[in-house]
Image (cartoon, rainbow, N blue to C red; front, top):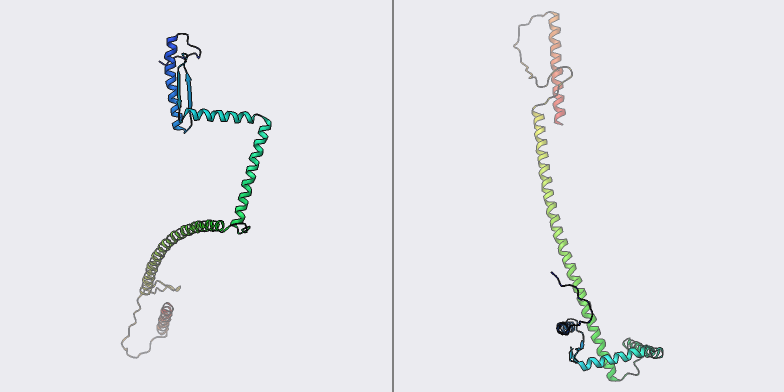
Length: 257
């Protein structure tokens, strides 16, 4: 169960008031010490008890803290006066003008201008400064060029690796194409052999090319006169056989060509 909220007012009981003072004083001194260490602050703490006893803490020296405090209070009091504030800003403006003039003069001297009023020692110091500046500039330039060369080499290595991979893929594709061409050529040769060995052409007159042709020579028969009808029939059969043979020869020539 948490403590109840304490009313911020004077404690009437002297014993309770002394106990509360001791506890909170120690806590306040602890917080002041932690603030000076953690935040690198200059802290000065002064506490007087109700009985007139002094308790203080200072991160450096209580005297220096008090002097610094008094000085700042005086400056703030002067700034509150309009005339003092105008004088302060005029002094600041004059100081800034002098600094600007000095910087412009140094810039002109670095650029090689207005060197007539300088002594040998001043010129030598200026030369040393310029040499140091040039050295720093060259070092920075060399560093940038080295980094760029390194990046370009890395890019070149990546491109080389990509080219090697592309060449490998091209070789593989060429091998696959050669194999496909070989298979196509073999299939075409097989088809041609099949066509040459087993032609499947037929004539429109009803004769099949696959039908075997058998021509036999008959033995000479005794000469006698046949009837005219039988002679005409034999002549028609010989004419048909000769026409069929010529057709087969033309077809083989066509296939061969």
